[in-house]
Length: 485
Image (cartoon, rainbow, N blue to C red; front, side):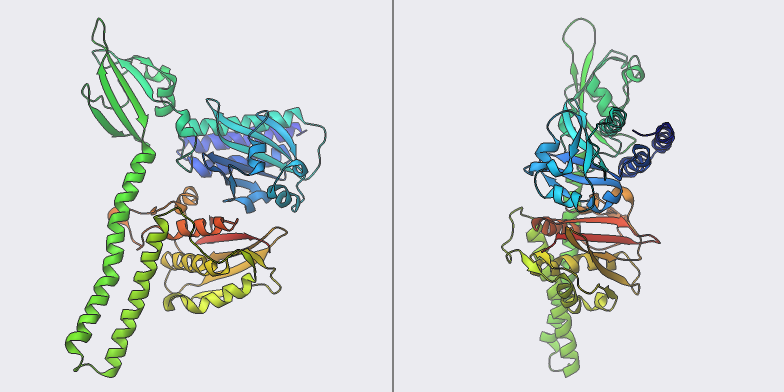
């Protein structure tokens, strides 16, 4: 059982988290800080939070020794996922009683039990909080369980408030928030404000009733899309309410994810048009030069033109391949998954990287690295995309470090740069298809927003996972973990 001083530390730490929220911080950074301050108070070896969507879960935040699991998926069909989502909302689980590969991964790190609590909204699970311990702890600790349950409820409240969560917009939290409903009088003052309205807007009944609507009221029978000050979008409709008096009923729903997808699609069309046009223009220009001025060009000029055409054609082929791959969810036919030497594979890939990146790569691979299990040929795509991404967001002459490591269950490699870095709230969004850290006229970097999406897809097809994190001292670290062979 945690000592009173530990509970006092939890209160102090939770106060710090509330102050972060009050100062405007949201989402993943706040959730991560909550896990960091809660871990010592619980006496846990580590804490992790799994966000759930219809297709399963994914570890999106962790503290302590569980940070290795950030980005790890928990498929909906995984026996461990089914086990963790059934039974009491808060309970203790012996690691060796968990089915599937997850038990082996945890046991290999000396973890013997967990206290798990589901974060629920309206009876729907949006995630689960896991406190992991190295001791067997046969006797359950009611105080510790209550604290874990309380923290899980706090996280659920963050989801209900749309405080930067969910990280992935297709989670069941979207279904849990029904349409907001309000009734307004002839003066536009709110007379009815249902619970969903409070959840969608973050405005409680006490703050809404007898006051003007906190958003524009469209004409009766019309639809209005409105952006709230916090960046979320509402789709609002209104109509006359039958009966005496002049009352209007207003319904509204959060369409932020839909609006984002539409914006992503528009951005993808614009960016892809630009990315395709550049190599095509260069290829056409050099081809026309060779056709129209062949006789007047020197042999060196012809070879240089042919070399540029070849380089640009390779870029074009790679871009088209990425577009085609991202446009389908059907797994491409590749080599069968087999044990392979990851160190040898990484060393063989570097000489084939683009020339402007090849000289920047610094390989630091330990001897005796165990074999990984997967498709060796696909690792070339993964490393190329990660190195290209690192090169894009870092100074031209700065090093790009490729290192590797292993533990009892996985073999991993990391690509580290010294560039602009990544904001903590973007470490998961960066894997979304077509997503860019910048948009419109502010985009300072080329690309169609597909590289990291493809990397995650390829790695997870091999039962591995990939994550991003800010690099200490500036820059970004991308880490890929594959099962040991």
